[in-house]
Image (cartoon, rainbow, N blue to C red; front, top):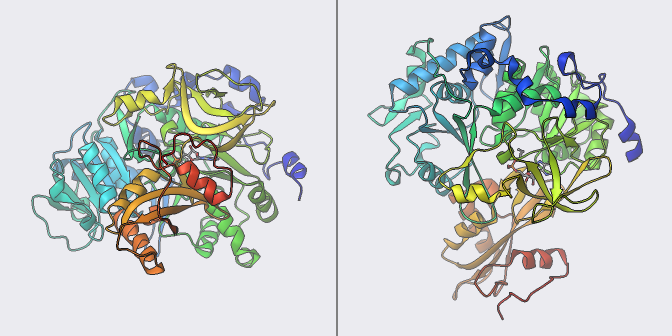
Length: 580
Ligand code: WT7
């Protein structure tokens, strides 16, 4: 199938906007749209009082949606259904457990560190009802990664499981007072609290904390190219954009069953794994466990998923699994598919057209933007290879390093005009870092390079920095290099993303060994295991290449750019700063 055919093709359903939000004409809507209109749906528009968990859950529980399913949950062991009314009760109970068994208060940090389960969602919503800041941690994080995040944020409490608790270096975290354990037969003391036991007994009534538009909600740690992971702080107001994009981009309506495949350890799994669909009053499916072609297709069939949000790596894996599994399941409930996290190859769009007869809609955004910003939404004709256009209310441009807007088709920094509702409001404990994201106090500079064509479509070109996107997960090379240097055999380490047909990129480490160590396959394996155990499985190098010496600047900085050029057989470019 050629691109031309894909471009002109219509979605299976009719143009996807409805009601007040119908996008008759993109340019017109983008021009007239005001975020202040979008927030009129929330009750805080009338009361001035804000709480995102109230708007996502209680508001619906107090409406005709009371007995509508909010959440289908399924994993290998559990299969449960919760209505909005039940979600309200369970999140109230969770709030009572957190409040009654810890000193957590408004503005304190609570981390959730556990695999997906209904309790994870109750805990997140319950904490938000108290006005506590929630920091989600991906379950794959190991001790070093957990420590960095809990210590930087001075977390007071964690909700975790007996399996994962050993990865929390409690003795080294003086601010950490309470550990809520989600499991069976928990032995309690002043520090360890049996979450499920108290959840059962807790009152289902809770008075939510009423907060300000600018009150903080979530703290997502994410990687850059230098330094430790940074805490990206979001606020209540983000919900305006989460709801609006749930309508415009996800096209969520009352009758939809929405499935976002992301874990809440990543921003996609909170903004669209929880808030977007819940704020819109749609039904969500949450599937625990890991990727598997059969269980994914089976779940779409079983729950009649209509709108599906996933990532290119997952689509490529499904693509690789071929037609066999597809023939076993009826996937005709699907009517809208979206993608995020990495470039969506035209090849994958073509596959989607063939097997689902639907266009896969690429969406571009990042932890720092808090919600979708540049998307193939609504009635916009898709140009395969493009991330789409700015959603109404968002102003995006390609700027040079001084903040000058470049002409169409010129490559430069992808930037967003400061001041959108879901924009991060702080880098935790690091105001200088926060300011450094903004050029002339006007443009947020994303770290991605891109260009915009004459029609206003944006095309992703790559990262400006060395950040690695592997299977849609963001990994900072510095974090991996630092961990590698803790290994006794390693004297120097440089880490790059190496292009990979399925995962987008894989992590490749170049390593120089200390005197007395010899390169070997066993050593390479041991090093991979070391990073897996200490940092996280997804951050471990899949490839290791031993070198006598690594290219460095005179000031001692590893030149990843040279490593990348070696790897890709490209010209190494300017080497004037390299040491002899
Ligand atoms: C980086 C942000 C919130 C989304 C999940 C990742 C890359 C994201 C796309 C896309 C090409 C994309 C960018 C961005 N990225 N979406 N549609 N096409 N690249 O969030 O972990 O904060 O990573 O993901 O490089 O800067 P994140």
